[in-house]
Length: 353
Image (cartoon, rainbow, N blue to C red; front, side):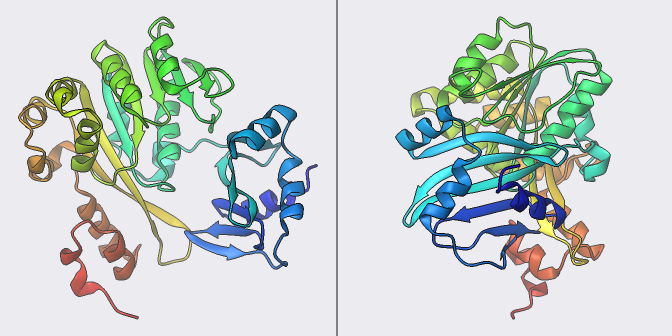
């Protein structure tokens, strides 16, 4: 058992999400959004290096010593998997670990809008799950992939950096590929995917122009493609996708996106008032001929009104989702205000400390 495993066990036992280990500081864990230190003295650079290098093989050590950054997944048997990021910082080595529960939660378990199940049963199109780092995008996507895996018979290809949730084959066949171990890049894996008879493709991170372009093209060619972006509402998501491309390509991409976009689920996590962790709030956008026209004509500013007008179809704005949690007493007025997009709607409820 590696020495660091006891920190992972403590993180799991306390219901935390992240473990931070940095030279010159005591280890800290994030619990319900807040960082809390372990009751121990700061680690020297030598102590932190010994602790972190214990779980690296020679290949990973060489990569880190050459590049000063490293991403990989680590599993503690019978506990959980962890997404690991090693880095160098002002005082020496550091690392951040994100816990990945062994059990994949269902759409019902997560209490996210049930309309997400409809996205899982589409045959083609681009579905984007978005939100800032730590907003639960990976957990929501894992639940959606599990729904497809359980309810349909398809070939699902995931491209991840690193592989987070490990899926067993159920009714579908899953091919999970990890950047660095199984393929060189997201774009290389997406290009190869065309020859792998996929029905569903999960792109763990749409981080560059080439990857985004290939994902849109794959959706146009008849696959159901899931991807992620670090945006917190539907309109910003569409703007981000288009703005990645040079100005001379944007009209073409706008047309391609108008045809291929099947939906957007933006997600945030808010602290619960009862202290029992955090709850998800979501903005939902569903594709339609009307949405295609809005995107094609560049009228992205009309998307909030479009969502409002189609609430009966399962669409909702982020601020409406936040307001619903506030009225139910699940989140505090201050938490609602801090996460709201239109602050003016919530500022009369905000209480200055």
